[in-house]
Amino acid sequence: MRYGNALRDEITLPGTTPLIGIYDMHSASIAARHYNGFFVSGFGFAASHYGLPDIGFVAWPDMVGFVERLRPAFPEHHLLVDIDDGYVDHEVACHVVRRLERAGASGVVLEDQKRPRRCGHAEGKAVLPLDEYLAKLELVLAARDDLVVVARTDATEEREILRRAEALAKTSADVVLVDGIRSTELVREVRDVLGNKPLLFNQIAGGKSPRLSLSELDELGVNVAVYSTPCLFAAHDAIDRALVELKKEDGRLPNTTEEGGIGVEAATRLLERNLGGHRPVRSEVPA
Image (cartoon, rainbow, N blue to C red; front, side, top):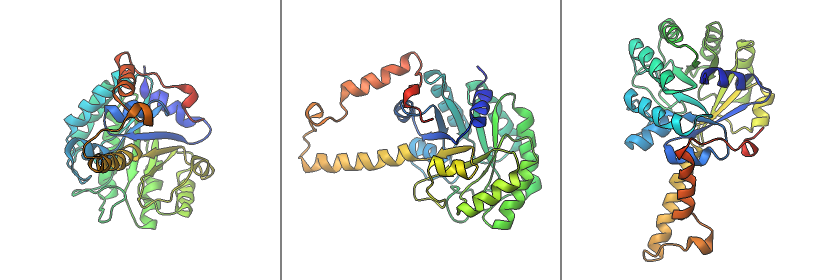
């Protein structure tokens, strides 16, 4: 299956395509029941695999290894992967792109940040000179076969955002992302300078960007929306609340049969789906 073309086709459909941020195989197993597209975010990966913030600790072999585990379990899901700045060096970036494509990734996101890098919704970001980033981007584009490539800018000043967006629109990148974009007005301006180039919008709870529905994003001309951390943050909250309750009950576990919670039977049923590859439940996938 040509996973890049499948995602490309989805992006051309009417409406905004949602891709849900997952951080491990278990979160992917749950998300797969509701959506047919995943996003492997740098934030979620750094948190789950290293217990560290999203400031450049991700090692590319770990990311490739994760995708190699994801794809056999979810053979029909779109799988967009955050590769940060391509792990600094352009030769490494090209190698990682080839490895991810062989592993079954649908696409990658390549940013223009320079080290030390930051989460796209954090303060203190700095970007590479545009020519330097464009040179790296062109090498990555030449290295891929079918893979979707999202060109991402982390510029923060409005004039520079629009200058870079216009430059990215002229490349053969499939999609453009302005990360940490702060207003719907600026989304509209970016949409205008991109012309027909698809636009991606990144939403993260507590981030810099406005909270917008898929309908609102569609009205703004956004083609793809990635939700970086809903699973990670939900797990954070649920685990904390469960352990507070366990301590309150003097270590007595809840009765999941009576209280409708998740127990070993329900968890096992979910994970058994991965034995033969999880097929998305079409009736549960938003239109």
